[in-house]
Image (cartoon, rainbow, N blue to C red):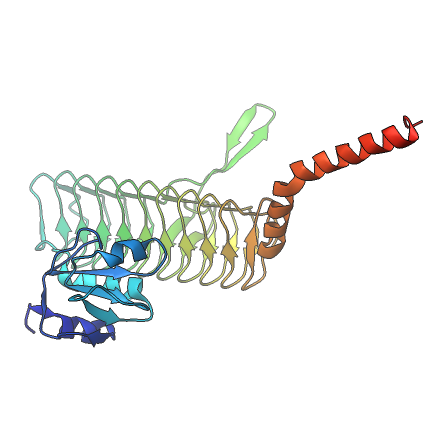
Length: 343
């Protein structure tokens, strides 16, 4: 297929309707306020609308409204989703050829045939790195680890011994998979360490952000379900079972033994207490902390978490509390003036 992308080809790729010339050549992607006539951008309303009115882009992915004259509109119900597909097509990731860098340290019992291993990366004994995987410089793959095809393990990411990484998993810089869980018991002679004898398993298409951690289980396994995405600085503790396609934003934390269903969304700085069960499709608003089970499909907010609408009502009531206090004080003073001091 031709490497030249036109507005018509892009519309066909993402399932958009092309409103304007279909033969305009698009070579790159850019924000609305920086795009040129050879770039495509996207707009999804709100603060983007101001930038849309003055954009110089050659084409814009847009769900509603109009672009300036001369800009081709690629009409799509979800411009951001369509943009993700478009950007991957226009700016593809350059995957390196297979091979082991002379400065890498690969144990003689490890299997890395068909994979790429960068400088100063370490692959320990018994590890298996599938063909097409990319272990970047300074990454660490522990003993008996299994790394799937087309994985990308970025600099200073760590996969500790006996853990399993599925196909097409991305570990961002500094991610740690399979570190010991926080198992410690106070005793008569101080704190006793509980051996963490389990493993961590990441299913296919998982992505773990920079400096995020997925701890190994104390006895069996910690599991991250297929297609789930963990943002930077997320903590998943020992023994957690997470379903498919979950999204956890930065600073989210899931304590040991918790169970998350499929499609759970946790906004920034949210938390799940140990042993809690969260149903499919539950949504945590920012700062929500669940200390009891969360039913499937429920949106929660606050700490301790409660129903999202209830939490919003409480927040609104708190905002009016100062005026309510002033009103009560005025009424008390009026009462005292009229009826004298209270007995």
